[in-house]
Image (cartoon, rainbow, N blue to C red; front, side):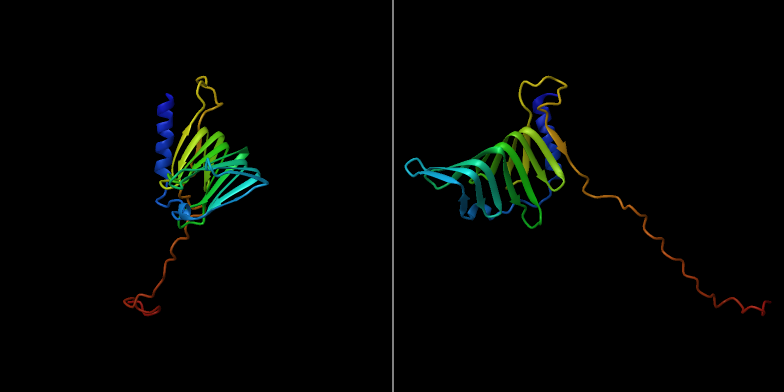
Length: 197
């Protein structure tokens, strides 16, 4: 299958199973908290580098990695790049007790556009549904995924292909429902026993 058709099919499948619930809408308005073993802040360039078991938190968003570099533009908008073996991302879905979780060798987070890119061994889970590929883009506002396989893979090779697992949303009942009991009532039009005519 042609790569662009493959990507379109994956995007279509994921769009069909997405529910109307979205990621927590207030996350981008929350303060950013970072913890690390070492910090290097360059105010002139607006670049901060955090190394050593780094944890980035903004609202319900948590990003972990060996290293996270955060850049800020003149409008105060932030972009973060996390790297590690593997870096991880987690965000709560709006109105549900459920999270989106993602992993990659590199994760890029754009707080303005609510876009997250996962590169290298990319893997995203939402409930029981999973997407795996070499590069996955996820928009936390729209909950739309796009997954790509590695270029230059031979046809028929399983390495580098996009993998999607979509669980059924309704499960059949394991046990058939109990039959409604039949009620027996006396018929007042029948004569009592022994008075048959």
